[in-house]
Length: 304
View 1 (cartoon, rainbow, N blue to C red):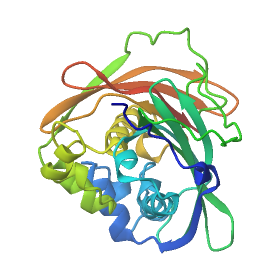
View 2: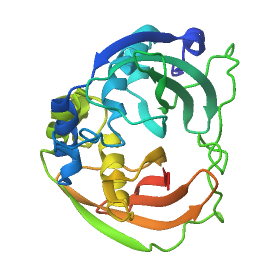
View 3: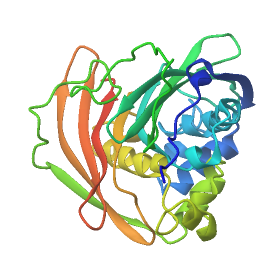
């Protein structure tokens, strides 16, 4: 008996959603930072002359509804949808998010290609303010394990990571292996962190909070959001920058790997920095309690 071939629908490369407009308030910004365990006053001081600081990873909050819209528009069968994992992330920050912003986000599938583990799909989320000026652009890369690409898809290529396996145009090239860490930080991951992050970010995906749903999806237990793991790492990077959390972040790029279970710990390792015309690229990785790479090829671009 042959197993039916799992294949993405041919229309996926043309799927788009939005715009959705959301207003950013101080409560949301502060809740997101608090959910990550931030304590820097810049994230909470409503009397700060420049206003409350948005965490660099906050854009995932207002992008999430568009991810749901894309999922609905793509008409993926359930047996395919459950095979999707967040594989790569490439965030560009054109200007900081501020209290009172009315942000409109559009999303569209921009790349569909076959990789050895399965079908790789990139969705671009573009957000602009009320004046139409760009605020953030994020490329989310998802890998559908064991799923084939449609034969009629002809995607437009997107920028690649330095090794050609994902997004990340213009990143400083390494030597093929990551260097020994310059610094490391052990970060506790509480048993309830995914629940806290879910509510503070307003990102509701039951594989992170419901054991039954996680088991049905083939996971050993509920797992921490990939974006939460990445945000915790970005926080550690900024704590070691001369300007701390107020250092202007222009870009965050990474590739996701091992899952982070709860309770546990993660270790964030700083791998050095490269000065470029764009700014200062800080390299990092995140290891699980078992020593597996939860985040690889991590880069934060800080505008000096």
